[in-house]
Amino acid sequence: MLRLAARRLLGLVPTLFVIVTLSFFVIRLAPGGPFDDEQTLPPEIKANLEAAYGLDQPVATQYLRYLQSLSHGDFGPSFKFKDFSVTELIGQGLPLSLTLGLAAVLLALALGVPLGAFAALRQNGALDYSVMAFAVLGVALPGFVIGPLLALVFGLHLRWLPVAGWSPGEWRYLVLPALTLALPVIAYIARLTRGSLLEVLRSNFVRTARAKGLPERIVLWRHAIRPALLPVVSYLGPASAFVMTGSLVVETVFGLPGSGRYLVQGAINRDYTLVMGMIIVYGSLMLVLNLIADLLYGWLDPRVRYE
Amino acid sequence: MKESLLEIDHLSVRYPAPGGDIAAVNDFSLNLVAGECVGIVGESGAGKSQALLAAMGLLPRHARVAGSIRYGGAPFTRELRGRRVAMIFQDPMTSLTPHLRVGAQIAESLTHHLRLSGAAARARALELLRQVQVTDAERRLDQYPHELSGGMRQRVMIAIALACNPEVLIADEPTTALDVTVQAQILALLAGLKRERGMAVVIVTHDLGVVAGVADRVLVMYGGRLVESGAVADLLTTPRHPYSRALLRSMPRIDDPLDGPLHTIAGQPPSPARLPTGCAFHPRCERASDVCRSRFPALAAGRTDVACHHPVEDA
Ligand SMILES: Nc1ncnc2c1ncn2[C@@H]1O[C@H](COP(=O)(O)OP(=O)(O)O)[C@@H](O)[C@H]1O
Ligand code: SF4
Ligand SMILES: [Mg+2]
Image 1 (spheres, rainbow over the protein chains, first blue to last red):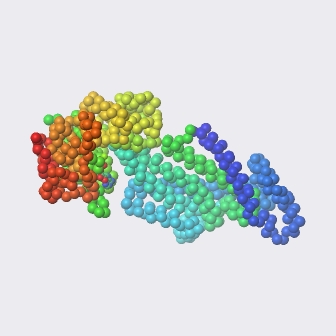
Image 2 (image 1 turned 90 degrees about the horizontal axis):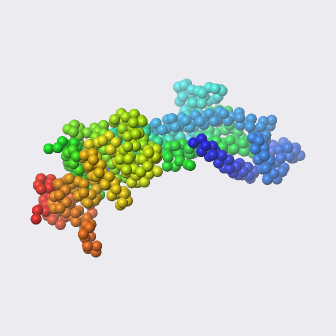
Image 3 (image 1 turned 135 degrees about the vertical axis):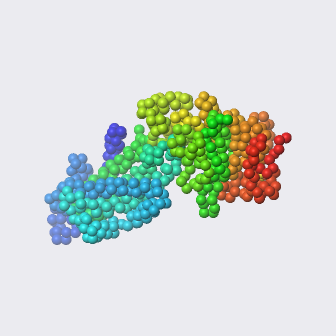
């Protein structure tokens, strides 16, 4: 299993290479450059700046140079946040963003799966209908609506949690942002789990398990739950992508100093190296998460186990 | 008089549906005594599986079940399943849990009902696999169902069923989904196991040859009802119900001329959502009269028990 994981991990390198190459050229296709909007710059200083960052070279040369510095683990200097390297900038915001994203995904699993399972076990009961109603609402409402709403209720009205802001190490500041991010995912996972568990509970192998006289608890946990989770695991990749993009908005709404703002500002400023750094970090993260989902899938269903 | 094991009395199974209930089973009764073998025949949709699943308590929750199901004189409970009464099904390909190893799926009945330890259950599972003639039994224990052929999987299902030495085995078309050669092997295996263990067996099959070979009694079902029941020797030679007769005639026989006519039963089996009035067989019956269309014939005792206004009389 470990060897398999290591091999699959190595297999991600070519994919990452393609991502790096594509983004590198696509970014340069966009009109404008990092020093275009600074109207105060005299042309000769701008030319000097561009020369200093190697932007006067042909794109192919820039690309090769970039790859070379990447191979040393160096994302290069930021074009806009002078005196900062991209690594430093990402290092400032990333831990918080990752914590937020991870908390949201875990929260979504921890709440979505049991909600869906209970709904399925009480099919057509009051709980089932409430969960389904929530699932429809949760999927439909965007983060910039849910976020302020939660802040209003739990922050301003009930005063249980801080409305916004951040103080290092204080998990209370993460609760509302993580919940905001997770809510649509909880809703979707609950719906997935409910549907697939209902289907599995009607399957022939569950009938066999029941024919053995096993208590319903064992039928559910030993026989039914693993196959029922397959669609949820398949959804983990897209869910992570959703959470990552969603965190850009949520970090802004709740004033969290995560790395989202660097991606937004980097893109607006045409800060090529910063954007590339963010793409590489988030791209690798997505690839690894998808790999984990794949391995998990193989564990749940031996028929698709890779050799 | 032998001891009664499974007693099914006036069983009916309905499914609520918008256009009126679907009557899958109507007034089905069966008294199974120790060691006997009962065959159940009838076209697909006749309610054979529904009746047996209802007896086992394995129907979906929205099924409306009425009637009484008793075992050894007491109401049927979950703990009897797999312990006293075991059941095997038509689809071995989908009847085993995909993510659990074969050995574990056999062993769990043993640990649950007989409180065997893990090691003892595994040893017994191996022994069971050998009894059902699974090749390479030791290796199979640790394989997953998808690594086994359909015939092997049905053998595993049989091993699971036999694990706790049940007194009753219900086999619902155990060979329908298998290749012809494998069918014969599985049937021979079942017949052998029944003989050695003296289990009572209920077998559902399309194959009257199988019934003739292994069963003591036959039940014929049509439109969710029992239409005839009797000893194999009587019912398979001179059936009294026109439907049983037609069913028998539709069986190809070894001494049929190869180019002779194939007797099929004209018309379609009835839908349980819209059963014909009176005798459900009347649209297809050559003996049907007015009374058949209006009044339902009750099951009446005789040489065979038969539900028909105009049974075929002994010639
Ligand atoms: N869950 C269900 N809902 C509605 N009708 C059902 C359901 N399950 C079975 N039936 C009906 O019950 C009838 C009898 O089915 P079954 O017992 O499986 O027939 P067979 O004799 O071929 O085993 C079928 O016509 C089927 O349409
Ligand atoms: S009751 Fe009438 S219709 Fe039904 S089988 Fe007998 S003769 Fe035919
Ligand atoms: Mg059937």
